[in-house]
Length: 204
Image 1 (cartoon, helix red, strand yellow):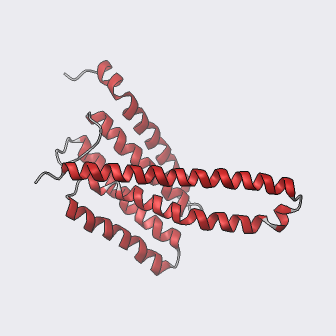
Image 2: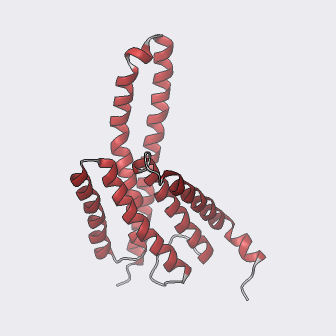
């Protein structure tokens, strides 16, 4: 039985969930900014009397959204190479790794970081398989350059999330951030300008 239609459906679902989570974070940021502006105008001492509670509430609202977004970003990776059953197993295993590290270290950031490292390694495998033309991969877009660009862009997002979640106080923050920036720029360029590049450098 062909698994590709199911994996395309999974692609679409994850894409919609990602858009929804990003939209929710955007709405929260807008509402929070508007409230902070109103509070500062209404109470000159608000930064001293109410700002800390405001930040705590905002973090409490954002935390589950960010965690869900990180998990969804990770789940976008193995769907390229696995059957539906194997995908479920690997996805659960990835979450289990993050939870286990969280439990061992008592630090949710370290747990999310471990999850993102696993997802990044899997994404790197996907990029390599895309580059060599593996027929088992499933993408919504066509063209090898576009697919490689999509893979690099996704890897850049994963590394950027790793920087935000787990590397703020690490010596690896700047190298990983630089790598994420390069991957994002290269991936975006390949994704959006692959046809122009193909016309300029025709095969053969």
